[in-house]
Structures are given as structure tokens and as C-alpha cells.
Image (cartoon, rainbow, N blue to C red; front, side):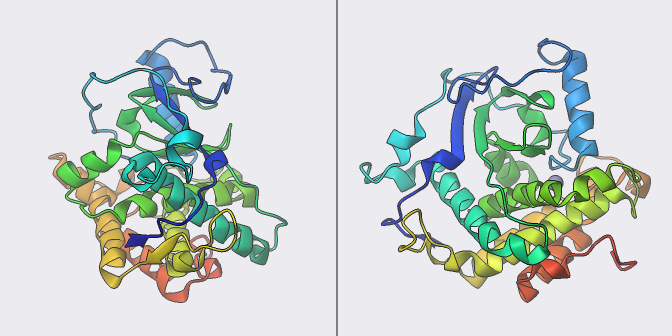
Length: 307
Ligand SMILES: [Zn+2]
């Protein structure tokens, strides 16, 4: 994967909230249901909500990063603007570029799904913990989409976790993760989330698994077209190249975070009744299906018996 260093990034699509309670970078003022106690019951509530609503990577066994580091967010406009020639060395700016590409894709593709226009949404970078429209969350839940405020949330240290604990190395894991979360945003806009919320929330054929596999498939469809996505000016491509090796990294990542693999890795027996995201084989296959066809219409995980 080669990023285009001439690309002009749309810094309005991400915010750096920094460490702790959130709001540092964006002045978001998101209401927290039931008060603002750190962790505890709220933490559990948000984890459950996120699981129900099809966010998160289901990595609840994950630990937080270390507690060092500075508070407060950063100004992405300054960090990721063209005036900073080294901006693509900054993980936040690289992730912003991925977000720009994913949303440029959906701007174009979403109307094809027959539900009006795509509504862009921001990604919020945070460290350790964050207040969201779904309650307070900490890094332990992994990246997630919150349907209540429609933001994607990610602690970028998650990628280190992915590499060290799950063996999913390679930078293309990053845009895959983000494209999966934006897949949940698309599902939210389409009303798929809301419908699935009435179905089973765990089990091998549950609505939750169908949502997650569809988000993987949407990520694959984006990956197929990623090199076509243009920057803010509409002139420069965001990616110079994406190779087959990059795509394999996304597939390997999808495989590493299947429910069965995670259950095995955490020392337990594989228990399909507790599946929420799909098996390794399924996640890999649905990403690949999205990628090969390059068409989100191929991602109908709700209308098939062949999950
Ligand atoms: Zn998900």
C-alpha cells in the first residue's frame, strides 16, 4: 500500500479527543445516559449496547494500553494539513486518509442501494476511555460504531493489540477495521441495524452475526474500489497503490478475529451459542465476497442460508 503524499486530506472527517473523558478536541457535548461514572455499570452497559448494535470487534478480553501519555487531543487540521510535509508519518493522518477514502466510496455507492444520499460521519480518535452517545467506553471494547451519535470510535493503540495479540500484522489491517465500522454506519443509514436489533443477538445464525459479516463484506467492496477514491480537491487519488499482499492482510485480519479463534485464544471451548461476529472462515469469506464482486449488493447476509 502506498499513500499519495500529494493528497489533500479532509480534516473535518475525524477528531482527536485525546485521553480520558472525551470532548477535548471537538466540544461534542454528548449526553451520557445514566451519569458519568467511569467504568463500572456504565462500562458494562455500553459494552452490551455496542455488542447489540453491531459495533466493536468483540474483543472484550483485551486490556487497556498503559496509563502513561498525555491528556488532551490534537488539532488534526494542523497535523494533517498539506502545510505539514510529514503528515503521513502521523498515524492519525494516515487513518484520516483511510476514512476519507471509505466515505468517498460510500458517497458514490450508497445511492445505488436505493435509500437516498449517504450522510458522512466522523471518526473520533481517543485514548483509554471516551464518553459517547452510547455511554462511556474504554479501549477494551475495541473500535466501535455508536448508532446513537453516529460516530466511529477508535483508540489507535488497538492496531498494536491486533498485531501482538492476534497476529494480524500489516498496515492494511487498519483501513479494513475502519471500513468495517463504516459498514455499520451504512447499515444504520439503511435501517438494517434497527431491524437486526429485533433479532437474536448471539448464536451462529443470529442477526448480530449477519450484521457483522455484512460489515466485513462492505469493507471488501470498499477495498476493491479504494484506489479510485479521490482527495478533497477531487483531483489526487488518496492511494497510489494497493497490492494483493495488502488485501491478504485484510483477509488475515478478518480471520484472526473470528469468534471461534478468539474463544480458542482466550483458552475456552468454542461455543457457537455465543457467536456474535461470525467464525474466522465466515469473516474471511464475506470480506472476500465483497472484494471480488466489488458490489455491496452482494452482501445480503440476511437473505441467505449460506452464511
Ligand atoms: Zn462490527
